[in-house]
Length: 230
Length: 125
Image (cartoon, rainbow over all chains, first blue to last red; front, side, top):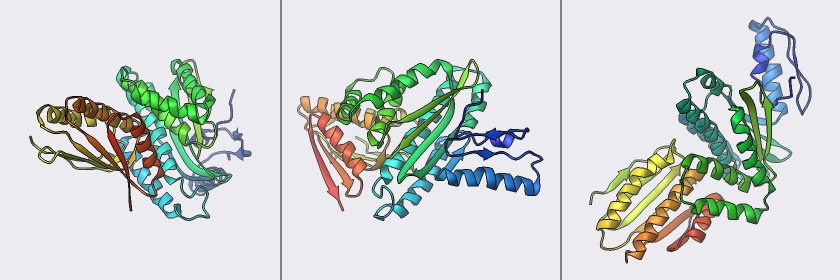
């Protein structure tokens, strides 16, 4: 079982067979190794750069999210959006703040998720998995998209799905009411509150339902990808 | 009471609280590593101020970006201001937004709808 995973470009580097990775936007053929010198450059161009371009990606990051990284990428995105904000010909010329917001929410959700898991659990397996997180920002069909992917524990799948399904089922007015209700509630569990509020916030800014995909890896972990269009 | 001065960083706001004038300024960006931890110290100062002050406070809030946890923290701040108001210490919130920043304006409007104290939304050039 090898389902299509748009965000899992890191896999292309480590496949030793001549593998084929399918994707929604088209076929991408991973060349056979040896990855040395010229061939390595070829792989970087053909499989990564070309693929990212094809997907409309402007900015990508893979690795473990730290607060510092979130700040620096935030700067880079701000600079990019500032150049485009106000230019009436650019897609969503006034949606810069929404793009920035959703980027911050997604990356901090990932960072906080792994931080909580590290505190709860001495197992280094999950720590290594935090480095297999990814974030993409791009433009598709005239809309900005912010997409992220990270490993999650299977025990968290149900509650995560419930949150997303819930916000996706609500009309704008009801989403606003839910947001306000969560703001009013006195916090018992501040972390659960934060994750919930962040998801509602993204849904309020999005121009379409939040898209997610959960790909099982083994009996402990799955890979969660999220895509938000602005 | 001592002033509360916290220098702003890329992700945490500048705090300039003056107990003598009763003007409490929050500005910059707010998406710190742990918002609840950041605002813990701020809240403690506000609690002490409300206990000792003879009059209320004017919050001058001029943020560029805030994440959802920070909005929640500000809501908690508003609760404190409301409690102080019930003890005769009138508080006012002035929410400043840049005219191109629809996002922050929206956050202000949400908080204004939930606040039971005077809450002004002011456009700045």
